[in-house]
Image (cartoon, rainbow, N blue to C red):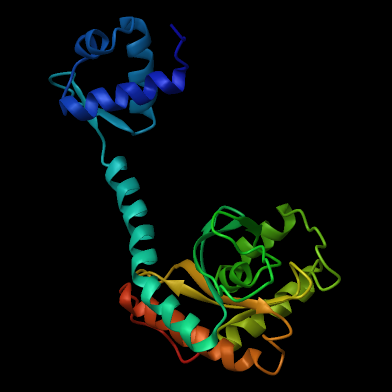
Length: 258
């Protein structure tokens, strides 16, 4: 029989507590077939980490409200995808270009949904599941533009500034100017900064609290998404992001989508 890792034991313990709703140490040990000493150690760590709570009178354990917080975060993300989909379809129909939805995870963006232009022969990096840096993508810059200056400064100091193309921004002062422009326009542009021949226009999506939770973008070959066309597409993306934000409960959308 394969020996379980500590993580696997902890996950089984979570399942046992969730199933029982309220359970003591010895019952958990009997249920799982683990030594009481092992169960005691795991329960101690998980309680100290606020994943479990113990009733001071009965000494029994149950899941903490931290799981409710985690579930709410997952549900919120799923809600964003569901709410954004119809708007993404509209953008695809109007522009005939690929539309992307991205979430943010630590110092990266993650593409979570896409409606691709099936007629395009250009294979772009913006595929579902792909991760990319914040500083050189449209969605990433749309996110950074609405973060506190301290966050942006700390991010820049820690980031590995790889120059993907000759247009990639690797200077902090230049990035700051770019973020200010984004705040003025309400949308961000990746002008072949991640991939030569690909231009991307993006705008931030806010949840009801006002924080930026995602970003929507239109990407396509720079031969079609020209510099002349970019402002028109940018305004369309900005307005669409504002509509998605409103559907998510955000009510303080300014004239530039900020």
